[in-house]
Length: 169
Image (cartoon, rainbow, N blue to C red; front, side):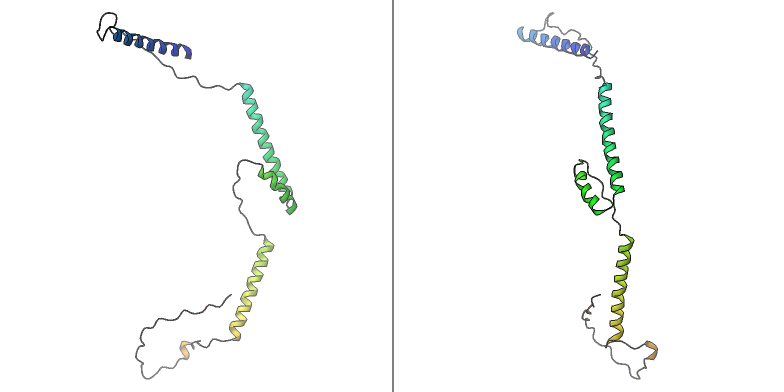
């Protein structure tokens, strides 16, 4: 079917070329020989859809099943072994894969969280001890304890304040 449409297209092209040749040989004069004839209508059919043979489909399916089995085996092996040595041994196997994996969200273990919280509490306790041991000189008295001055002082000129030094925590 496809070859028939190709042959008919070639025949139509040959007919056009013959007409052009006849025009050129007659010096551009139109006569009965070179008069345009009705060209055959060429119907070009769409190319047939590619079809895979059953053997090829089976080979592709088997290869995909093999890849799935390898990833499943690797996932079960990594889930069973959680030690550092097992992780180091599994790393070269992961490098052989061609497709990159998505990044895994990393979490902090409960033991590590407890250690971090204890360390932070210890830092807070030392800071609190330092603060209570040495009261600051510029500590203002509470508002209720302040005496009212009989004479109001003139407002001071606006001066930029120096930045306060932060104590390291």
